[in-house]
Length: 322
Ligand code: NAP
Ligand code: 8YV
Image (cartoon, rainbow, N blue to C red; front, side, top):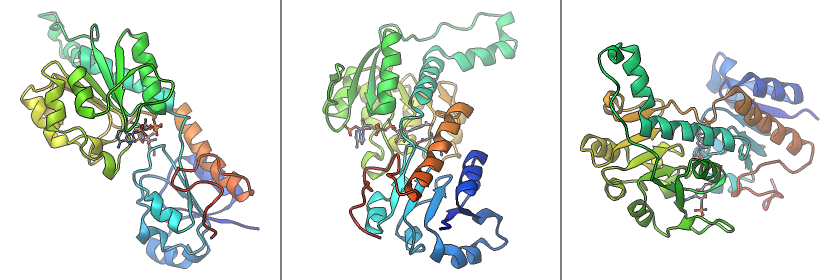
């Protein structure tokens, strides 16, 4: 039987081609009048390959009476209301596991850039300033203790790398992780008081919004380094800008922002901060693995098998029949 699958926004060719081969694909962005097209095809759509960060909420889901599965690109799914999807009997899948090492590599790169001022020193050379004077001495990872906020799949991959760099690791999450030897702090405040580098890799969403605020930044202290590769919403960006301006902390390395791709001009203008354009997982190898998982989730599900990576809120087998 033909299965109708919708894509709302253009995404990587691997996903478009993979979905197109297996299903009848509707590319909404190619329609002359996308609104009219959506009204026409919504009643027959059974699957969606979600590109970008289209919000999946009551208003979105109620358009599709026959929808069974949404395959979302990316491990973070703060753009999805999992409880509402479950209520609608819709399974949502994401792409965990296949990007852990890549994001951890990027995170270590960001840490080294922020602490050792590598982008700044490169700019210094290019500006011809080395001819007059050596680049000033920088801060160091030597003797630092890193606190990881969110010691999950990616957090653990970051922790392994930090250990290899000789950096002591401890962490905070809602509960201690079983079988983990790092010191656990039951509150973020205690973690921040006991480290001089905070590495955020917790998911976004209401529960984690602005967990890293003025108070936490003050606890990190004047030699403190803030790294964020989780979600921009976890850090109060205004408080961070103030803390960097006031030298409440030393520096920050950010791969994620509150209103991407818009980055506050204050951060762009600052020298004591390193900014990446959300490139944690952005290698061809890893994005292909993520894209293939999007396609495979749809293929397996419509072949009557368990989808590979459902989000915990919409488990397989389904609790609610469609
Ligand atoms: P994961 O395995 O689910 O780990 C998330 C960790 O966060 C868990 O250890 C969890 O521990 C902790 N956590 C969740 N809610 C929390 C809360 N309210 N307070 C404190 N800790 C909390 O997820 P992952 O695969 O490592 O991915 C983590 C996040 O990284 C994603 O959600 C995404 O936002 C981000 N990410 C960014 C990039 C990038 O390109 N920069 C790439 C991939 C992922 P407890 O359950 O014990 O609290
Ligand atoms: C991607 C990410 O940039 O997986 C995630 O949660 O943040 C990144 O890997 C993005 O989600 C791809 O759509």
